[in-house]
Length: 210
Image (tube, rainbow, N blue to C red; front, side, top):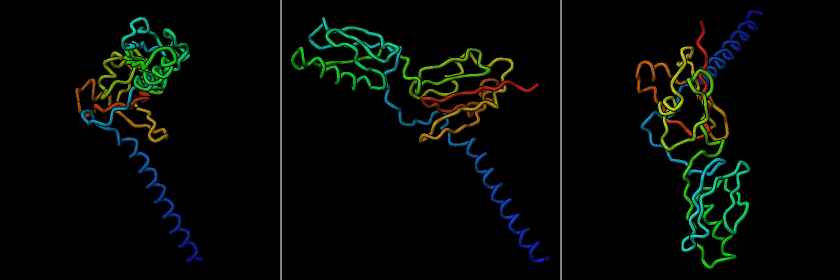
């Protein structure tokens, strides 16, 4: 009987140790792995999104050159070419497709596309919700930092729990949550709390407990 009780005790200790280890690993993962400001990660290519404005320049054909908005359905219309899907493509990819379409009408067309107003795809925008002065979605820009985002949304409200804020980010298709220290960054000027943002980040700023 004593021996059986001893075996069960050992099993319980092992299981408890594994649970503590798993919880510790999970909690640690939320606090790490976000690049600090100044870390230069690879910059993703810009993908055109609804609301962008495009300048379409056709070399040697000023009548075909124009500036057009990307419609809510993700398409654009230009002289000779109607309803071309623009969203989800880089400007260079869209330019090559436009050249193929225009080749039906002119010989060896050369097209350059420039984005003159940036909105971007929804999946690439940075969303700020909760106790920000002006919660909103922001177009991602290369090497944008947490401080840049907070300046754009006007800082924190008086009711914000800045050091309990979190960034929700997809990494290799899996959604992860990371704690950030907005009070330390904004109110105390602790630049070590500044981190690099990524396209599609969601910054959640909770209300303080009173």
